[in-house]
Amino acid sequence: MSVTVHLNLVDGEWVDGERRSNGNPARPGEIVSEYAVADRDTARAAIDAARRAQPGWASQPVGSRMAVLDDIGTTILRRTEELAVLLSREEGKLLSEARGEVSRAGQTFRYYAHQLLQPQGEVYSSTRPGVHAEVRRRPLGVIGIITPWNYPLAIPAWKVAPALAYGNAVVLKPAELVTASAGELARIIAGSALPPGVFNLVMGAGRVVGEELLTSAGIDGVSFTGGTGTGGHVARQCLAHGNKRFQLEMGGKNPLVVLDDADLEVAVRCALDGSFFSTGQRCTASSRLIVQAGIHDRFVDALAAAAGALRVGDPLDPRSELGPVVSPEQLAQNLDYVRIGRDEGARVVAGGTHQPDEGQFMRPTLFAGARNDMRLAREEIFGPVSCVIEVDDLDEAISVAGDTDYGLSAGIVTTSLSAAERFKRDARAGIVSVNLPTAGTELHLPFGGTGASNHGPREQGGYARDFYSVPVTCYTGW
Ligand code: NAD
Image 1 (tube, helix red, strand yellow):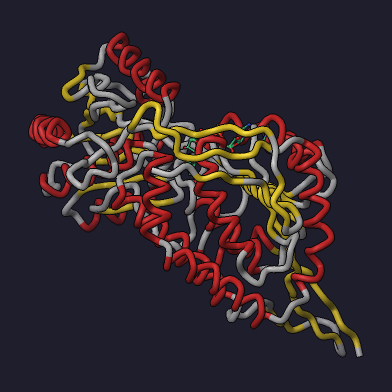
Image 2: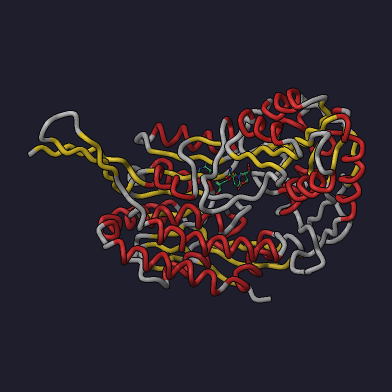
């Protein structure tokens, strides 16, 4: 297969730099793409270009902004197959999952094109005679966007699209492992009628290019998705450098509760999908399965059998049900957690090993006999590793589910309406699912968590406007 080369995009020009390559996690030695590493000067030039371009873009008529966003979305959708193959080769997710992600990215641009037709302000009655009171929105300005590797196209899309829609300019810094998808997105945007400088791409290390976005006076806000540790650093830097606005979407240790009255088949399906699909590399993955005693043994046996039967292999092979782990470092970390879980006294009932093939494949791994105070149950692993914690009743399940630093997504499998309602009310998470996997969200609904999973306004849907625009309260007397 061919190797694509991606350059940085600054003020509408392609800017070269030291070249690096990214490989295919399923096929050792196969290079997927090359990219030009941006240095601090390139990042500064991108920020300057964005500053110059932003006012002109914000003052374009809504119809023009809509047309640009709609065109970008349509182009992404038209190129779904080709972009999905590239995404699958560079990140390792199944081709079917990659197609879904590309489609999500395209739909997201089209969604925000149409969001611009929604009301953009509010009118209030003033308590003073002869005064008109209204709230308008103005763009935040220049946004630094920093993204992780696990959704190489969808996460950039769900940040870039609303940023542009609401009249901002953007400097995108994607994760180093997935520069090809970001590079293709940049090519598509560069081919649209978006004025030069409104969207810029800079690729490279977080501590160089990312750091420039956090510390530059030319950036008004940073939208970040990644690990909780990195997110804390982003927050501190944004506060220290100009009190920038920031939005953080971070890790998870998401619980799926299974009650005695659950339909076993539904429970196994939700746990299998939530724990292992996308190789468990989802911030919304179910990594703690909190199971009531009466169904516990049947559930563990059925899930272990289903996990053991999953076909792990090349993501481009339609027979594969699980792709590789993204990098050797991530695989080593996953296997380390298998050792930690065993040392803590939990029992491996499925997987637990590196699949002895070529590539970075790992068997889906299920632990039984876990306790919620184990590292296995407290720390985000970000791989195909899940653990079962046995509980007596709904009260204990809710308490264990909420006993975590994180709070992104929580699910319950039950046939009891009252248990479901109670869980929706009491689960400490930003996303709650009933009889559905904890991973699986829709682009027009708000996305985000609580605790160590999130800081700042929600992403996606109409809620995205809260980060990408600033309310301005206007009083007019006559
Ligand atoms: P990461 O924190 O290592 O990196 C995320 C991004 O931050 C990358 O682009 C990286 O280069 C950049 N970065 C690193 N150091 C930086 C610095 N000093 N300054 C500025 N930028 C810096 O995360 P990752 O390994 O790419 O992704 C996995 C993590 O992302 C997991 O914790 C996962 O839960 C989380 N995630 C969260 C969500 C969500 O919406 N909540 C979605 C996907 C992934």
